[in-house]
Each structure stands twice: as C-alpha cells, then as structure tokens.
Length: 146
Image (cartoon, rainbow, N blue to C red; front, side, top):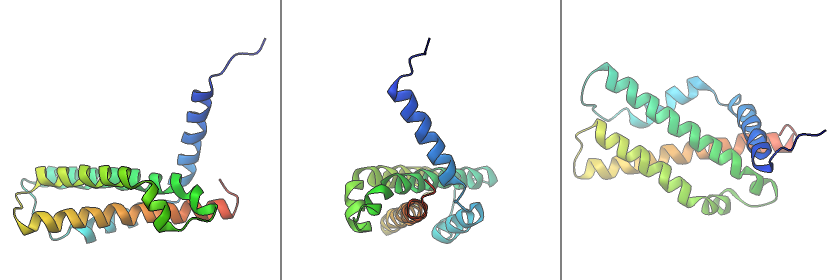
C-alpha cells in the first residue's frame, strides 16, 4: 500500500535540494572578501570573538540574500528585469538589511552620520548578494540545471 506524503513536505524537500545546488555556486572566498571590502571602515567593540561573530553574521545574511535572489530568479527567467523582480521582494530585502544593520549597531559604537553610512553599506551588501544569487540561478535555469 502506498504511503501518503504531504505536499508541503515534498515541496520543502525540493526547495532544500534546489538550495543545496545553488549554494555550490557560492564562492566562500568571494564572500569573505566581500565582507571585508564592504565593512572594512567600521571599528568593532571588543576583541577577536566580536570580529568572528560579525563575519559569521554577515556571512549568514549574505547566504540568505543569495538564496532569496536565487528563489526570485524564476521571474527573471520568464522575462522580468532585475529591477522588477527586486520590487517583488522589496519587503524581504528590507528585513535582511534591517537585521544586518541592527547586528552592526550591537557590534559598534557608531553615531550620527556613521550610522547612516552603515545602513547604506548594509543595503549595498545585501543587494550585492541578492543580485549574485539572482544571476547564478538565472544562469542555472537557462542551462536547465535547476
């Protein structure tokens, strides 16, 4: 007799499989360089453990942004531009940016104009990794590797 499998669990299984394939395209060294190039100007409170914590937090959110871009790349495959697709997920991008910004506020003592600069840097960082994920996944779809 056949077992009943819920649609939600099957969908989640397919999503995890797709994300694993997409993450193979994520270069870890480029991720580390990106973190250093975007957030090099910021002084951190504390020692080496804060530095590692900041790198891990940025890396986690970069991966989330990369996967989000990959998920929304299906709209680009069907003819939407990157800007149109980005408008579709503006809420999620804002949440990722706000999360990264709040994390950086905990790790630093920046005030005034530095906070505004920090927010724009977080926004650029999340946008960069979203775009990378979008392009990589769109390429996979065009090559029928999805």
